[in-house]
Each structure stands twice: as structure tokens, then as C-alpha cells.
Image (cartoon, rainbow, N blue to C red; front, side, top):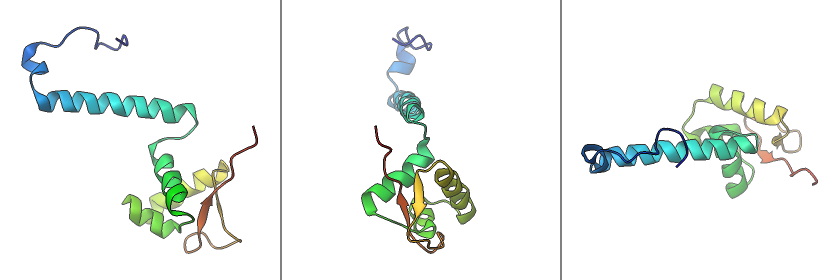
Length: 109
């Protein structure tokens, strides 16, 4: 398969256990997702913020923190990082905690 130790068939004692197989599949899916996101320079937390803004439109940091179930200080650090990389920006010079954040336009190819 991938050379990551999953090339051999599992013993029946494990392969027949749905819970074990679900945990294994979840871990593999998580690794694949992380690799895909890393290829475009973001991680799962970045993706969560960007996906919400893309779907719901401009949001405040407070709204983003509530929707993602993270505390405000964590959201401030995450938005600081996204803003420094040019992935989000405040709208119309608004203070971004109460004001709205929007995704930055995609760079020209």
C-alpha cells in the first residue's frame, strides 16, 4: 500500500473489530487531509476559519471563535497568523474582534 506499515493484512482479531477499523481509518484520513492542506500551506485550523468565511461571508473573530468552539485568545493568534500570511483581512479598517474578517482575494496565477 503505502510503505507506512499497513502493507500486511491485519490479524482477524483486529480486522474483525469495527471499532478498531474505524479508528484506523480515521487516523489515515486525518493524515491524508493534513498532507493535502500542507501542500497548500495551511492546516486544519486555518481551513476551518477560511471555510467558514467562504461559506458564511465576513465574520467577526468572536463569531468565528464561537462557531469553531475555541477561546478568544486562540482565535486572536490564529487570525493574526492568517492575516500576516495575507489569507484574511479586516473590512473597511474595522477593529477585527467586533468588525468583520473576509478571505483575501486569491493571488493572480
